[in-house]
Amino acid sequence: MNEFDLIEKYFNWKNQNLDALGIGDDCALITLEQNCQLATSVDTLIEGVHFPKNTCPADIAYKALSVNLSDLAAMGAKPKYFTLALTLPKFDEPWLEAFSSSLKSLANQHQIDLLGGDTTQGKLSISINVTGTVAINQALLRSSAKVGDIIFLSNTIGDAALAWQQIQQNIKPSQNLLTHFNRPKAQVALGQRLIGIANACIDISDGLEQDLAHILKRSKVGAQINLADIPLSPEVANYLKKTNDWCLPLAGGDDYQLCFTAAPNNLTAVESLAKQLDVQLTPIGIITQDLGLVRLGDFKQKCSAYQHF
Ligand SMILES: [Mg+2]
Image: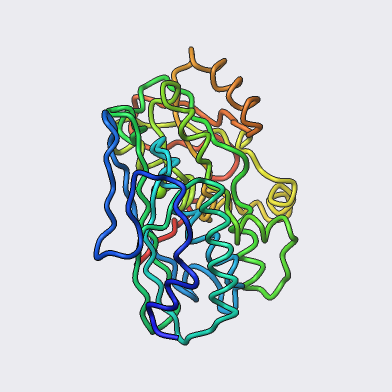
């Protein structure tokens, strides 16, 4: 099978959005909606760096698209299109079959269309570029946090980091932890519904403290967070009881939850959104005038955040 047959067989499925011309020409063509901005982002996953060797292809596909959807979610954008650059060590039909069917299933769930891409031979790596749309000047930014805002966190953090730690120690993580690690759920609906409610927003990919610090820097404000309020799953809470290693949830990364700030008079709106979307939204602190991130609670150690280099 040559490259063109491979694309035709595994990656050329019917588009859901009819305002774009996808696979088949040199470029994809996108018809722009009026009064909208395009939000676009790219993320690469490399075997051995972002997922362990021998991770099943369905999980790899899910994670590769989901972490990109998470960036659209952080800006409140609606997913529309993506392109895929796939580097494979060898041509492997069962692998491609599982990868493409998982990719298609998540794409259809979010009504995002694969418009093109590239396949090459080499060390396993997956690059996905996503494009979404958001009403003009409505996108959630990192730079709009205001002094007095409440800081919220969706669901729980630390689960994926605990799974990764256990894998490295040759302990088999629970199914719940593994799902967080292999199939992080992007908070796409939440992101879009936060427009008009949140002031600033970010998705947590590299750890809460480092990612919240991006909001603080861009907004030129500080923050206080209360460790006792950080939402944790029973498994991570149990791990902390034994080790007091708060760096795991604060700096572990791979959470893909949203951290956002909202004015106190939007608290009721946030609470009702949590009910409507059946997502846990927990206040964990406030935005302050004094620069820097202050942690309230009984863990003073500085955590070294995830660094790509
Ligand atoms: Mg991000």
